[in-house]
Length: 62
Image 1 (cartoon, rainbow, N blue to C red):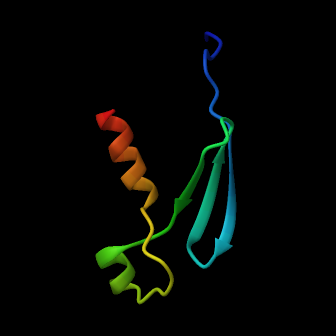
Image 2 (cartoon, helix red, strand yellow):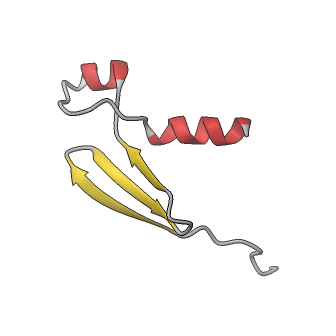
C-alpha cells in the first residue's frame, strides 16, 4: 500500500447542544450545527447553522 500524499488535520470542539466548531490547520474556523426541517423535527433550539453534509455537498461542487 502506498503512503498517503495528504492528511487533513482539523480539531472539532463542542460549543453547546448540537453546535460544533471545526478549526482547520490553516486557521479557518467553521461553525457546524443543524437548520431547517431537521431542527424543527427534533425540536432543537439554538442558531441555524449548516449541517456537516452541507459542507460536503459544497466541496463536491468545488
